[in-house]
Image (cartoon, helix red, strand yellow):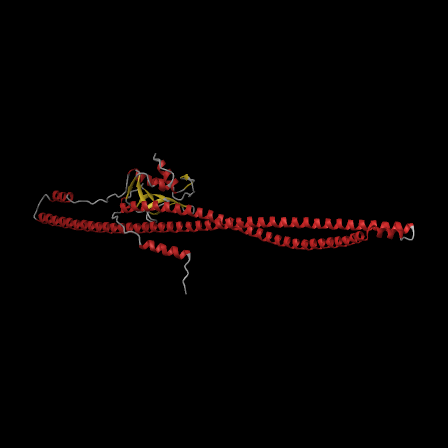
Length: 423
């Protein structure tokens, strides 16, 4: 049994194929990978625009196809009506033909009878007429016979004229019906030509529609390729970040071990000094107080180191956090009444005299690009259509959604496209 594949299955197969043929990653540093992600995101955005344009154009062609289908249906309906009208005209023409033939036959019959009577009178000549008149019994009889002959002549004349008019009327009707039929047949031919033209246009539009299908399929394959690259590079960034984290943890562990070793050595040194001092005191040394003070003065006191950041970037991060909980408003730029992601970032930096573009994509191009591992408070992180302000400790503050408003989120909750240092 032959398998049947849907368009969705073909797209899935194409996507899997794209994943298999993605070029291997050549970049080795997080900064290079983020730059590659930004380039791929830009190409992905362009491809999405291409897909959107092709879909819009295809929808327009689809509407044209629907309009052509409607016109073809209307034309076919008109053709059917004309064919019915032609059949009716042919029936009328056949009926008038019968009527015409009957009128002609009546005319011919009357004409033949009249010719016989005229021929009879002519062959009999004037003598027959005289005999008919003189054979009359009276004057009245003779007048009646003369009137009869006259009436007979008028009757024949009138019948012939009526038959002639009937023949002419039926012939005129037949001509008009033939003309109507011819006009209907011409209209039918024109409609059939229109139908042929519409079907040709329909075929072209369907071909154009299929061409857009090919364009969309190719664009979707490209989008799948760029998406796969971004995911692959993001995974590589996370792998490098994890390696960096482990390296730092190892360094921290070694540092603490070294500090512990030094602390124990110092304690051992101090213990030995105390033992020496005690031995000297037991020996009668009168300067024990001075020695004790000297020993205590040699002790080192460890102080906790401050890890807090400073500078304008930290000030910007701290200032941005004051607005946590305020609403998210699409298109907004108010830190109190509501802002979207780019409006929030723009308004925060504006408080420090720094002018940023309005859109998130434009904000991803300002300042200097740094790797995420080098991110500091006050840096702007772009995720592809969304931005936030890095506040340290792997976190950002950003205008998230209408439901959550301005809040703090893990900096790696989405694929990072680029980190921009502005201050």
